[in-house]
Image (cartoon, rainbow, N blue to C red; front, side):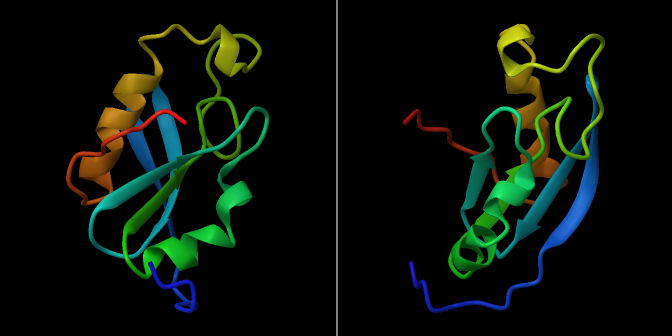
Length: 108
């Protein structure tokens, strides 16, 4: 990855899922890299990182449901309270909407 590549345009859009609209910000082309923010943050946590990653990858940062510009689920938003089945459908919908190949997630 080349950290010297900057100035990428960040494209923002909404992806409609069965759980609600999810806001995504993305840039670049190539292998998709999905960035997930901490609670209670938003995609903006990666505003400076997206252009750097976008030089070599399709960098995608999403607002988790209930945070940022994504729709709010019923009740108070909390990643901890979302059912385990909620996040995978959200993530699985994003690559097609971002015109990227399937995303591989690796736990930290």
